[in-house]
Image (tube, rainbow, N blue to C red):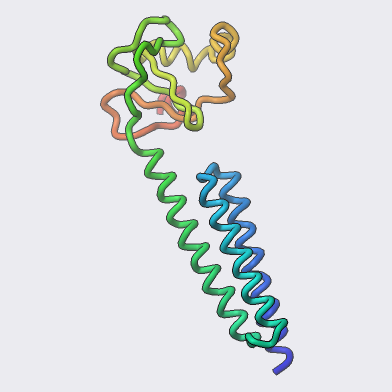
Length: 174
């Protein structure tokens, strides 16, 4: 019985590691910060509840394992929800530009956005698809010329498309 208790406690600690790894994965995948904190909070709560309960003698090894399994299930469900929310955000069309927004290529005011480029949550609106193509082809010079703080354009959207397309695929012509 003692070996089984040690195995259950070891498995409980693996669930805790899973919780911390999920929080780190959320950070690297750009998931909203609230999910990182909720995941960390659930992990720490599970640790405190199961570990102190077990050490005080109020919770058996099996109950400690069950507590950690329930918390790991919550974390897994939260991860699924967070990734689905990020996917939904990626698929929705861009919001209209603020008033007096200018095209970074031709510097004309944009009234009806034809094309949009996205880097993270930042949106860059373009007057025509030709302006977008020129911008993507010569990004370093436009960054320097317009003093833009852009690392890499991730996605593009052209009016009439259902969703966003990866910038690399768009420039290759796929």
